Length: 164
Image (tube, rainbow, N blue to C red; front, side):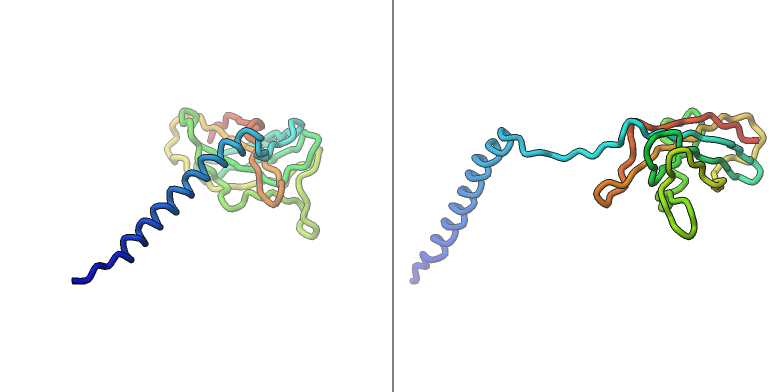
């Protein structure tokens, strides 16, 4: 008969290693929490403001057209545009993948203060039936900070739209 005690000591070693790692984590975590390791929160400037201009919705063509005007004091790099029936609380985004909002074909630049976009056209899903139904257009500006497009959660604008 062989007595293989190497296997038992190896398992005890692994168990001790795990216990030591958990004990160190339990000691280090409260220390780091107490000294207040900074968590950087990216926010938009409060002076960012967009407005929706010249809005039109064509029920037969299922199209939505409008302009955006930067009424704020800072550049706007992107927008998230959502559109749905007025009674829906969660509206789907209609410009998915095209959030970056640059003006100019030759020298792209963010939408600056006082600038207006060219006419924006989107295909929207509205029923072709002539029933009276109210829709809502929601626009959320976004800016670039540290190579990330940051949506401005406190600057969402909404406007009622009647599709004819």
